Image (cartoon, rainbow, N blue to C red; front, side, top):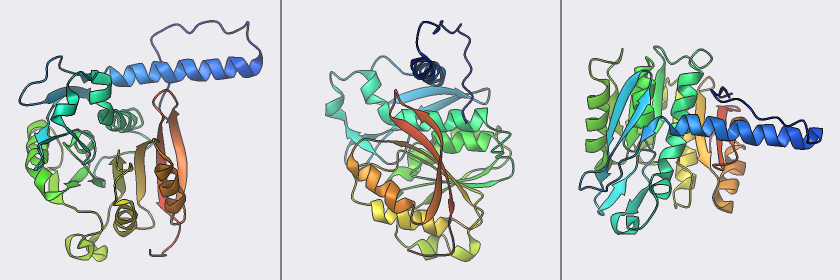
Length: 275
């Protein structure tokens, strides 16, 4: 579980009944942890031609440059989701950088649970790496990292990973193309897949490739592979994907953030069954 510690004194709940006290404490703890997570990110106050953010993890300042994809949309630091630049006008930065939050949650979990989920010398792959924040944090924690995404995003992904891990990481991260469900046996042959962890943040939402995503999860995992997956629930489609996912994987909720509507999951394959 994510460590729910806080520098703030907790308020008194003695005037509530026991059930209400528990709910109030959980709500208080949730908000405190979310505050600590969000404090790891510096968001610029002005939108410029080159979008960027600064994060603080593992004792390092991580500067992430966001890219313009081939459709002229900004690529945010988690997964390949994007938003049209024109839609940013008049939006709050909480909304603009919403897709960052799932990556922040996963990065915070990796850092604060480094003993239980030891990344040192482990083979780790991130799917839908976007601008690379999760991959960078895993690399700084000592993992052999392969960061993957669509081909048009790899240039910026490589730039961010190189900039933030060079001379800092134990192992040089790799950046590879991975289009979900496409040419998996060629790009990532099952015989050579030996990943200890598959990392994913904000990969499940209303896009038309959910079945391909499930095929990709299945293809990359051996019986011993652990998936760590941060997910925001938005629509019924996400719930249906989770149900489908549980047909192939044992799924455990390891942390929840009600105020963000985000859950963090751990999963392992049930058997040798294939999709």
